[in-house]
Image 1 (cartoon, one colour):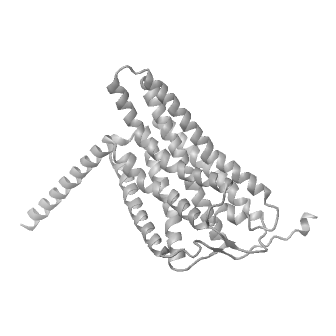
Image 2: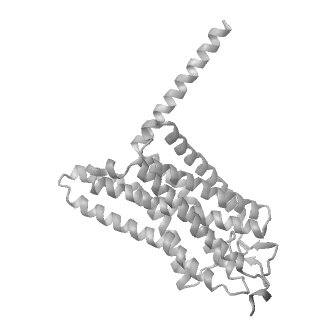
Image 3: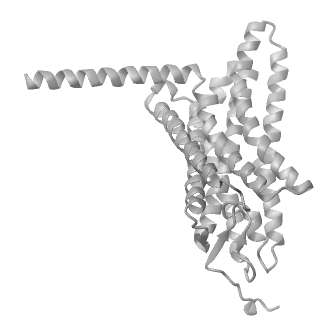
Length: 326
């Protein structure tokens, strides 16, 4: 067919289907509101502490700050819209808003994955090359890594969304998901969507599989380095610095990879898939500050110092006001 004669059909709205006859779903949405509130509080506390405490102005905490920012933005991209859509029955979403939602959800999901890889890089250098750590992991190096992650995530997800705009939607516009998910949306197209299939697998490989493989390799190197440490106390101390990061890796990658693998091999009830996917994207951002950052001695000490400074400042201001009044 002559390209001049091709007509692209765009529906003004999509309908987000969500749960299938799930009783008491409102309690689930209220629970997500609680998750979002804790996520905002925890990640805002971490970002504020890192910004204010000079002791935390190091290369490692550039990556930690970026993780907290990505977690906060990722939850903000999905939970408010999700709760508003289903708790108040606003399931019709304009075409442009659908594409915007798709972009931001996948963008910050990719950033979370890349941040875990950056923190694995920090750990492998710290344990395998302790004497060269401060020469390799500098603030400049980490800033460049973080900048590359943002640029790379922006590029691959812009392509992901741009490929949707070339599709025609002349049949159903009911999206069987909880947001404008890429797979359910491009499968609604009545034009050739083979390029969308290919790029979706490329994104899965680049965003999930390759970072996870690199993290596993890095911990293989860490394990080998720990075997060379003769003193048991030093070995345990080094292992403790990795425990929190390993927990973050597990709670992020295991649910999402298991969902993709199960979806490819067998049938998953839509409600089960939605609940698992939503919790995969919202629980890790809530737990990251608690499991990783707030367990770090440096951060706890910085929070105590900042609290004392704020308290002392408040006492001084109160004293000045009393003197002025008298």
